[in-house]
Length: 195
Image (cartoon, rainbow, N blue to C red; front, side, top):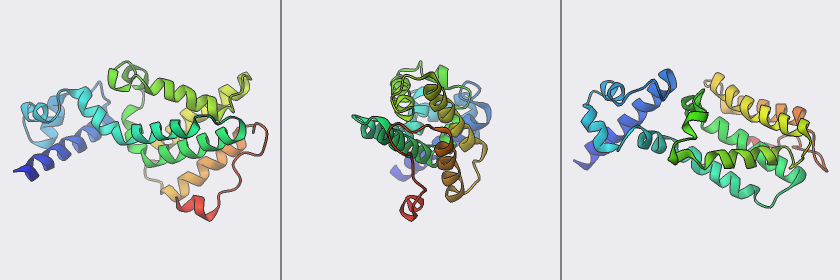
């Protein structure tokens, strides 16, 4: 019996991810998800308290990696902060590009939900790190555009192999970001490409 419950739970998550990516979080009802799974809305609610809880569980792995990146950035400034932010965010975006697709266009509204309220502060710290903690408007604008653009590219090129997308994104960051204090992001090593 536990296996059936676990399978249903996973099927609901997978159906929610597909529906959210196609019709958006707002445009998807619990009934839509239940219909795709072939179960009742009551079954969905047995597994998840509400649609927000379903989205929170779906996004939990990506949010965990984002929190880890935020921890890695603590205390870093200048070029080291830029490097960790760039590599960490590109890796996160490439790894979780399907989850990013779920949030496309709905990020500001989702940040208002309690399960995601802390994401804005982490995003702000990530942007500041990518800008090398510079107060120059150009550095801050570049960082913001890169973060949004990397997310958009990962959504747009969802079928591109990771080993093609990751180096292309890192090369873009190298060209766009003005390093603070020392060169930013040396050419990827074999070890970088394998991670």
